[in-house]
Each structure stands twice: as C-alpha cells, then as structure tokens.
Image 1 (tube, rainbow, N blue to C red):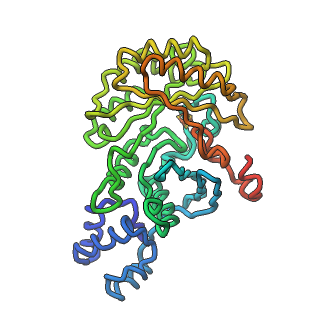
Image 2 (image 1 turned 90 degrees about the vertical axis):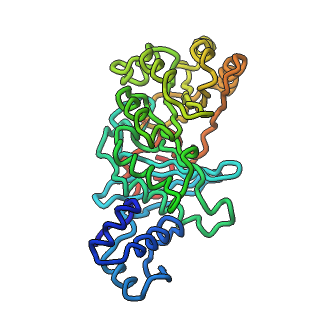
Length: 360
Ligand code: SF4
C-alpha cells in the first residue's frame, strides 16, 4: 500500500507516471483528497471504476489513526496514533467567525521549557510531512458537512507538540501543501509558525522564500535574559539580546507583525516591573510587534500557577499605555488540556480510561 497523502501535486504526478496513469488522474486524486477531503477512493466519482478499485487495493489516504475526539464548547481535541504507536494531539479552536487548527510537528520536544508538559518526555521523533498534513485531513473530514464558514479550517497555527523549526523540511513540505491553490489553498497570511526562538533555525526561516512569508510567533515569555533563562533554558545558548536583535531585523512581509507570545506565570514573569521592561524593549519597534498574553494554564504535573486576573489586566494595561497592541488569550482548549504547552505525548495509560484522558 502506498501512502498518497503528504505528497505535493508534483510528487503525485510522478507517482501517476510511475504507475502508467495519465497526469490528470493525479490532479483528480489531489482534488478529492485536498479539496473535498475524501479518503475513500470508491467515492472518487470522476475516476473509472477499475482505477477506484485499484486505488482501494493499493493506496492509503491516512497515515494517522483517529483514536479520540473530545469536544468542549470552544474547541475540539483530537488524539491520533501514528503507525509506530505514538500519540499526536491536534486542537480545533472555535474563534468568533472561523476555525483555527493547532497542529503538532513533533512527538515530544527537546527544547525543555520548564512550564511545558510536552517537554517532560523529551523528543521522541519528528512527525513526517504526511503526519502533519493528515491532522488537517482528519479534522476537515469531520467538519466538511457543516455550514459555511464552519466547513473549512481558516487558520493553522504550528503551535501543538514540538518545536516546528526543529523539523524544518517536513514543516516546509506541509506548508507547501497547505498553501497550494490547487488543493488546500490556505493563505500564507493565515498560517503561523510558533517558535521557541532557536537562533540558527530562525535565520534559516528568514532566508527561506516560502516560510518567511508565513507569520512568525515567538514564545518570548520574559523581558530579559535572567527570567527567560530560568523558564526557557535554551536562552543560555540562544541569548536574549541576540534573539531580540534578530527579531528587530527579521525580514517581515509588508503589513505583517511578529507575535510575541508571553505566557504569564504567577510570581515568575507577571509583575508590573516586567511589563514595564517589556514595554521599553518593544516601544521603539512597536510597528513590527504585537503581544499575545497567555495566562498560564496549570497542569497537574507542573509546579506553576496562573496569576490572579487583576495582575493579568494590569500587565496588559502597561503595554497598551505604551501603544503596543496587546491581546490576552484566555486559552480555549483549556478544558480539554490542549492549550499551548500542555499537549503531552505519553498517554498510553490514560487512554485505557477515557475519563482520565480528559483530566490527565
Ligand atoms: S513550549 Fe513548545 S518549544 Fe517549549 S518545550 Fe513545550 S513544545 Fe517545546
């Protein structure tokens, strides 16, 4: 069985050639999979019966297995299993007038942010491009019969498990598939790569003709080296000042901004003086940044707490008073523990008990 998803249109055409199929057959299959979200070749109605039968016997249209779907008022969390038995989480988030899909790019993560549950297991492996793309295909299949605009994911954020830029080539291929107008056709402006800020990876992204046109979000989480190093040990080898310098000079497409994500953790990075320090940093460059404050979502396996609400609003006010665009993300998906930094790879045991899966 050959896996047909995760292939670009050109790769699918090469595959067709190899099997003595006309080139347009590849285009038809591509449209069924990436536009109509169909995974059963028996329903590819503009294709001959024989070819449908052959596809059924020789081709696969998923690499992930859908294991679980947990619905909450503003989000749906999907749990998938890879062919080698690992678990991957994907969260569909209901925004005011569209869906945003948060996809994973690695199983586990070795960046080691102290506040992140995913980091606890280290990196198990990168996801393949097909595994990244398949998260969208499953979700699309799930929502395709809803009324517009709810029948299609509008925004994709690479913000699930893992550091996307550490899986550069597979990330790039998935982006290529997502933006292809002949298929999935999601605008580059509606894709966001969220990175922990590893310098050489960011430089690579800045030089890549495709990825540098996708939105960039940086998990900053601190106004200085000392605090960032405490909660994000990668700051030792990726110094705060160098990261800041890179962001200030990052080649931004016109009219875009870099999102600075700031997870507010009680008594760690949430004081007024931290907000003032951050404001001083951003103010001279405020046209190229916006800040997204994310009140920390406590996890049963980590020692950190969420600041009181008043402190969160005070932090925001300091930034707003300095004319810095600042939003607070009261994480949707919290109720299914799919909020940022809370996705976790090892669920083998809780899976046996579905009640626990939601809580754990
Ligand atoms: S916050 Fe992101 S980069 Fe940091 S350890 Fe967690 S998954 Fe990795």
